[in-house]
Amino acid sequence: MTLRSTASRRARAALTPVLSLLFVGSLLAVGAAPAQSATRAVPSAAASADDIPWTTCANEGAAAFDCAAVEVPSDYDEPQGPTTTIAMTRLPALDQENRIGSVVVNFGGPGGSGVSTLHGIGAGLFDASVRERFDIVSFDPRGIGLSDPTTCFPTLADEQEFMASSLILPQDESQNARFVREAATLARGCTIFGGDRLATASTANVARDMDVLRERLGEDTLTYVGYSYGTVLGATYGKLFPDNVRAMVLDGTLDPQVWTGDAGGKLFGDRIRQAEGASETYGEFVRLCTEAGERCALNALGDPAEVVEAVYAALKEQPVELPTGPGTTMTFGYGHLVGQMFFTMWDTADWSNQAAFVAQLAVLTGTVPQPSAEARGSGPSISELLRRLGISEDYQSIGGQVGPVCMDADFPGRLSSYPDKVEALDEQYPHFGLFRGWLGVQCEFVPVVDEDAYAGPWEQTTQRPVLVIGTRFDAATSYGFTAPYAALWPDARMLTVDGWGHTTIGRSSCADAAIARYLVTLEADDGAVCEQDLVPFG
Image (tube, rainbow, N blue to C red; front, side):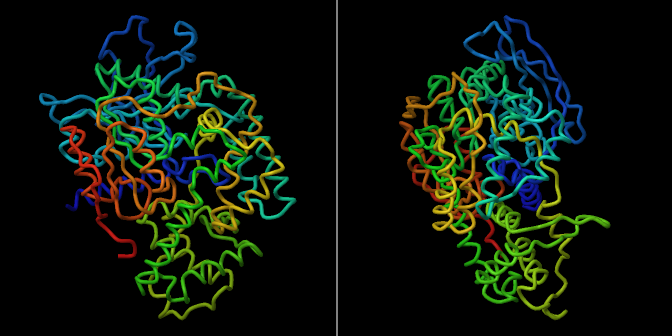
């Protein structure tokens, strides 16, 4: 039990920044997993099954994994034309004699590295029965990480300089104009420096790549686990290759009809319901904090909801300087806190730290009086909380996030309509509406089109059962998408996790067991409900 618990915590810590790449926003992924090394190999034109040139991964901490790279067509309309590299990694099955096959995992994004994420959490990702019977495989989708990444600036240093000087969130009319100008600059850079890769970055092409990988792995049919955006990839694969599916676990669903459908003048950030999901989950954060008493630091300062609102208001008026290291500080304002609160809602393991962090901000901003030493207790310093919450970590390149969103989705098309629509969304979902409402505005300036993108219809034809999972309070992929997503499949078995956070990884031994049973036996119960192992602030 201790080993499993430790692995689960490690999984959550590694996965949270990757899942936070779900959509391009003004606050990018914090603490994103760094790219790892993988061996490059160009297969012959007549590649046969199970011929991937695996070698031991060279990067530190990945000795148990194999790495490889394969070439796939950049444009599947020109199969003999230019190619692009897909970096892969695998964790071999423990029981090779009774091995069922490979399970391919996508951790979400778009923009997340499957290679580095699997290296970080692969050993504790699934129950023992899955580890014994399956090779666990993941890959960096085209345009991301080690797979010929889409870039938006000449160098990483240039990108970091641009992002450091950009607005986190606009808060008035003049900032709205600046925010749009910066979005246009980013889009122009992605088009200039990565336009050729951007033009083939649609989810449909990633699905086509995945079918090539399936064949190269020697699998007649695909066993797949997709989290978050990975459920859009799963639906796309199922639609394009319905006869090639063995099993699919689709956890943290996004309705592909919303992802690719006609915008109808509606903001992308509104359609995907993240502001709604975040507000609902934040309501649970406040409720559970209040019930936790002294186990939630905000209670020492008053009503938790009122304290947080007061801190938001104070930071709007005047940001604070927070220590990030010896002799260094960072300016931390309203947009930073909204973004941090949003991403913290994805992982309940961070809720206690987030509450303590906001409590310290309340003191720093003068929102509440400095508490007595007895009231402060022996909690962590604000510097320690910054490290725990990942605020002072670097972010990874953003080009891989721009590609699939801009190539797949539809947008309102009238920049002048954004401010009023964002304001209306923020009135409906305070703070989070502002944070999510501007999502994808960069795409309004991207002139590149992927002609091979798939935009529906989404009714599936594969006769294989699929396991669709939704968590009741999920800030990233609203639980309201779960049933509509399941309805797209002829034989979907729906599992609800009655808890909080984004996807099930490391949160529910009940869900882990259901996933393992399905992957190994292809059996799953429709309408099942699982509890989480831990309650926030517990």
